[in-house]
Length: 182
Image 1 (cartoon, rainbow, N blue to C red):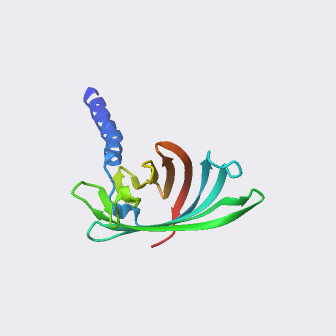
Image 2: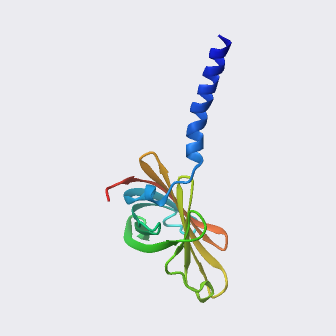
């Protein structure tokens, strides 16, 4: 009876620890492959008229055999115009990322001179989250940074976006996307 209890305790420990061990490992970029569509709610402290808005979001992540990847995201924003008739503005960004010597860290193919006002970008994967960073330095020397965290959660992708200016949060957006083919 004592051996049976030890056996059951050992099996239970293995079952509980195995998923935790698997979850602790970083995903590869291929796990994020596909066309993702969804919506998000954006909150800002810089607009009295539009402190809270909805956004429609499309993200296409295309890994390459080399380990590099392309990412395109489109955001349909409703944060200009009047509160009763907001204007829709579509923004689209495409970046190509190349692997670096660091595991799960990529640099953008086009990263300019930050002090000349050109944006610099990089990406990384930690566990189930692909983060893309885009930063630019103004003429006055302050910086704007956009951080896009895309986390795989079951069949969904959760978006957590933050826009910072010199460390102060200007805008956030949180949403959920679903895989829409590839």
